[in-house]
Length: 116
Image (tube, rainbow, N blue to C red; front, side, top):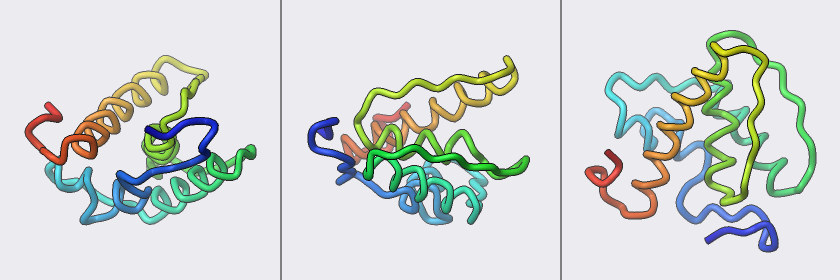
């Protein structure tokens, strides 16, 4: 299991493997639409986690920010805190988190049926 001591280790997947048109979410979610900006943001978040540095990202509506920061956070194995300014954003973040947890279950077991 990845740890803070070992740094960013994601043998299960990379951001692209989660969010790409042929990635784990596409295999799990009907009509999944991969977004290049989302994949790029997730790559930047993964690099910031790996390098233990802060990252500020500005992204417009529809980019898929929640999954872009949650997928590398889950893959890192580290504890994360997500704070939002509104209940609507909190709800979207919770829904995105559920999808990422399903992907993590698939990665851990290799079985799509075990993720829900």
